[in-house]
Image (cartoon, rainbow, N blue to C red; front, side, top):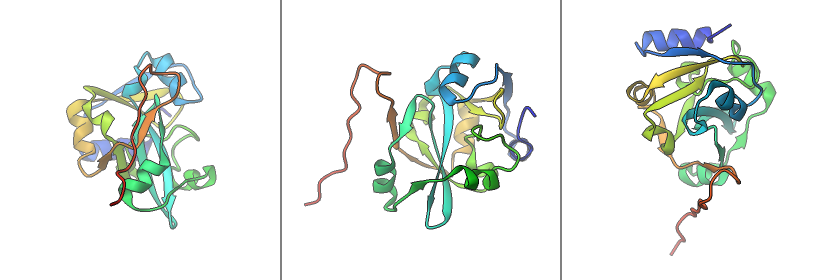
Length: 172
């Protein structure tokens, strides 16, 4: 498999152009960025969360980690990370750990880290561990037009010399 059939069908119906990039098989998004020679801040990683049995996809840069507290503060809901068993049912045509960062194709609510919307090019998993899809800025913004943009992630420690600080405003 090079691209999830569900994802390919969705992109075709939306008339979204993309390029398929093959890379050596990898097991995580940072390794994928390295093998594909893609800056990790341009690789959109999917993190699936659930709230009261409903699932949503958080799309963040591969170089970042999801900050659940920021998501909960912005959405005013408590979330938990979905487990692998849930993911198999939600993404039946994708390999474990290679979920495409376009939850709309899989009928999921999407929260996109606003940092991704500024990139000129975006890369997403194609559904396996050997292929990425390259989307233009315009096409990525088009598929994300109904997503909720918010600052929901920060760089993993050791990847930036600048601290990333943010806290919700105090009440009062």
